[in-house]
Image 1 (cartoon, rainbow, N blue to C red):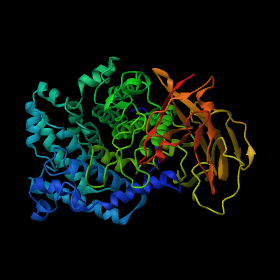
Image 2: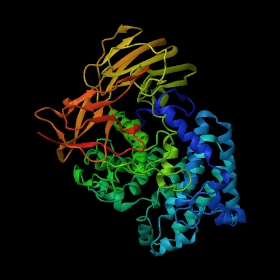
Image 3: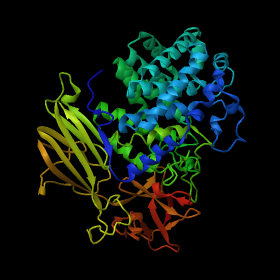
Length: 618
């Protein structure tokens, strides 16, 4: 493959510092730690005949924390999906933080799956019965057994890749042998029909296993899982997505992305780029960055009739941010980072309960709706799994590396570091043998720590109209290009200073770039922002209010209609209750209406009814 524009930093090189994203990360970590190994393995053991009577008979069900219920209930066709998500998330968390308790549980889960595989004859390592795959091959209705099996493979692969767990890799390779034989035995028309039933990320699993083992069996599996009706239509410029289940296809395209990275075959990359054009560029989004309704893709730029109680499935948000990350690494196009930021605040954070850490399957965009939260052990929707993974990844996308890190004849001679997302974090990396440290802090007005900090500085007289980022760089005197993202929401002239000295800088391709031999200098970046009214594409008189990247919501039990009386919608907003102790708050009120409306970030809304979109009239 061509050398990418950028790459991730190594897991463990970045730590989130105190702030909103670290708070949400901790909620996610606490959830991972709250789940017992025996319950995570309950369905694998039942399928393998290793569950004792205490596992089979205990509990009054289908409620309680003595076992896992909902989609994880014994007998559910989706049983066993969550443990793969858990294993993937826990492996990443251990790789980043070294948490010893979680590390021990990862080992116990891998051991448990390996024991089930042995009991099943040495290959089958899944919680669902292989008979479901017979039904699938026969064309009988069955709910996505490949989707479920993929989750176990994903967890094992991530434990192997992130933690070097050889047993996990061995279990995955032996389990894959079953799929190699099964797919080889299917007639081409039967295999094509099988691929029409949700496969999850099987394609990505084969690419990962090819990368980890070099075994050409996985190259063959990649070719077998080429989903022609989807991929060929995309390559021909068609639209195979409208009104189709979204999260069936996104994981397939993530698999295509991984296949390109591992094999270098350009047809896989072409599929990924065509998918993004079809799903995002040529389709549009809601103000939140989400695009689905009732789990299906909306028609291009026709969103008004799809606004309701079941918008923006969490799984689609998580997987589309992963896809945006891939495309940024390949291209360096800042638009993908803007997409990630918008969906992080108004999807990943907005669909995690700010106190319990639980997930909302959907993000309602109907007026007066409420978020419906899952429970720790009684639902286990698909979105519980992507919730577990999403909040282990907040540190990953803060920084990227470029330049000589990437090798190859076209690589820059100097290193480059991209500050991609403005989240408090610290990077400690190796710069070709020399240490590199980058500390990213946010100014007083952006998610200030300690809402009741009595010793906070007075600061500005009123809430500043912008974001301030402080970036301290120490490369032991080595020359590094520091690239600071200028978000698409920036409303005015960007200001940059190094150690208090203003810099004459230009915004080029969405970045401000500073090149110097860094020895602990601090960069101050000022990004002016303003609340803007964002209309629904096909209903321009209905608007949402967005403060920088943060969608605002009004607490109300019905959809309010705003009287403009000749004013622009954004001119109706006034700062409201703007400061508590040392914290500047993102709160507003709508002026000149018959009823007072107060707005706050959508990601802060928990159990209250709310509205995001507001019809307007003169």
